[in-house]
Length: 480
Image 1: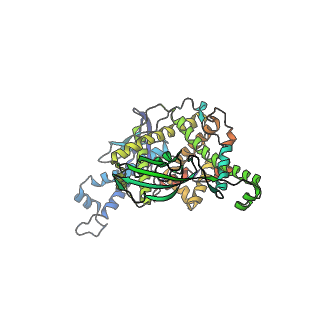
Image 2: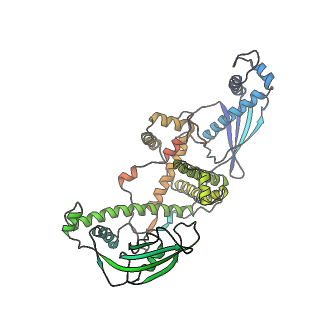
Image 3: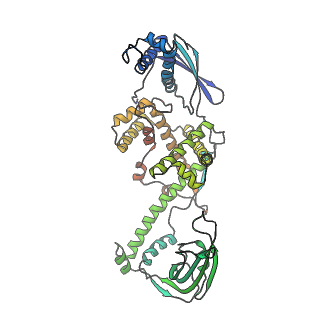
């Protein structure tokens, strides 16, 4: 069993289902427990309040109560301690809460033992019917001959020559042009130039230039309007272009001499094999990422149950917080971002809500798949994950285990690991085809062994989510 460090209290608690996706936790503290809480509150308050004739922290309790009111210390004790008692009960009963509780003191508000109830919303259990029969379409992870030749031609292009031709211009041709660019009848600096060499199809200025140069011949005068590259400027640009010369790029023959002069390889065969291998690795990695996105979208779509508003709000808040952090890292602010994008704070939240809902559906779907397939994480795996996290964060392993234990973070980590296992199961068992309907072999989508074991995992965020006291905002459980 994984050892955890929890701040325990001698309380009695019971759990009962309630309406509206909530549970009711009933908690009872005996007289001695409440007296200890009151004593702790008194010692805190007496150090903060200055009374005539007494040194700080020395005023008797009766004098302090006479000054502040008879029920003040007890009320403060409840304010300080009930949250801890509630958290212990959440951990004890393994309740997956998703919102703050509604606390109702049912007995002992003024004296003696205390009883209170916490009504709290919990994460719903849903189904993802059809998860075991998903079909996903993605591009083939194998590079085509055209893609390989394009990479090889990039090398040949480094040694290409330009040759004047009499035909109309096509993409990759270099044309010599005189350009006059104006706006509202006034020439625009930087858009008016003579004898300018431009590569057709490069999209270097505005797309309309390439559209008009394709098929143009020497002597043609092209006049057209174009949108300004700065989308905030509504007035159109006016171009007048004279085509003076068209030159085609002539690529050298691909032979062993070119390869040995321009690369680390001696022969065309070696060079092509290396290009093919590198392109295969790159494309496979890109397709794996796309496959992961497509399978996530597909399984999330299977969740048809209504989503708890509390989960959507929490996820929206998280995304907004991530955006603020990115902006701060770039020495910007949310207010500056809103001004630059022309949005209000409410419009930004509305924009973030849709992806937040998708994320919540995915979370619930993966939990459903893990439950349906009986996917479990044993304590040894969690211990190993804690060790890896400690190494990545350069923390002492004992400190990481202590943080997880004091916050109940083993439960959160276990849930995240189960979701990761569910996504792996889906990727291994889904039917995968390319756009032509041809099945893609699973081994083509398997990540390299090194990649599978590398990178950050969910535990980094779990550990980072705890403050210096080791407390977490979420309720968690004792692992094991």
